[in-house]
Length: 247
Image (cartoon, rainbow, N blue to C red; front, side, top):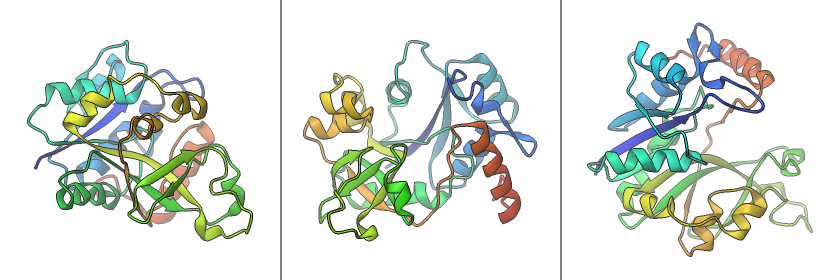
């Protein structure tokens, strides 16, 4: 079984234009993501972009990069284009391009899930929410699962409803996805579904079409960069924890 990591990266962003090229202690963000992903057990890592500036930057630091169509509406569409081309890989892992200090253990847990369960179509991660104020934050996507760790639902709303408050019930969804390659190609061609549109959560398309999503718990913290303020926080975390780009 072969595993391919794909990092979709686009230049345009309403909140932070040029985010993949933002400098983090002398290296562009996309280089941090790429080199952290390379520390995992993936067989290959590829940046997928439609922007020549990102393409040239990745090439300059020695990374593998592919130019993709400019017509994709989602990162999943971009990843599916890569999956179509790289047919010798069994599992495709979508790694967010704005997670510069992603830990290899997060990726490896998804790899191991597919090694242990050959019938898996799709898997992702969750992290326990410690502070209840984050449960109310619509940018913290919540997930609830069944007893076998398959997703029941993802929502920006509070799920489950806190009739009897118990913070142990709340998990944040971590937006890293692993797909069986053949399923990914079908999934990308499915029409958007009502709940997907309502919540603006693409993974609901799989659930609404009757597919299961395995959800693995991670204790690793995630530090995404959506704004310039987030970028400064990540820079400080790197200093405080003495994080190295190649370790």
